[in-house]
Image (cartoon, rainbow over all chains, first blue to last red; front, side, top):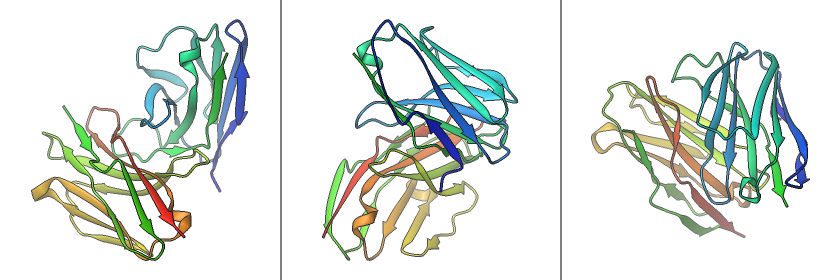
Length: 115
Length: 113
């Protein structure tokens, strides 16, 4: 069983809605990640938090707003999304985000549909 | 620049056959890490293996085995006696110092009963 959980599993939202994706990890990791994955494509990195501080933002539009309330939780706030933002959003965690050798462990993802 | 190539977009084999998924990578670094992940239809990426560039020893885990050859920059993955539950997309990935992990485009594997 995965030790990274994500809610909700599925989300349908309109372009004017505000919603949030949630991720929680139970492995004591200090780094957490958000990825976006379109159908039949590999995951694309969006954000990295290390020790609760945003360390990487891959030039993601401001309609996506990450938040890391503590080392176990990671949120992704969504506002004014576009239909092209429909994708699988994956959360991952790793030891502390300071080393390229770290293994990232992924959650089951949230399938987002923007209408 | 780093790059991971999984030339096989889609593979179909009959259950119990052996199947090898190819992964070729490019890097200028001498120190790097290679990974394989499995993504079943449920969506979660499941970690399978991590290998550093200094460890060329092949690895076997049950029906899974990995062949790392630096001379050809390849890190191939073989499933022996495939089962329907092995049906998934498999990603090979590379990370080197100072860079984020880079995934290949994935190989979709269909195991036919």
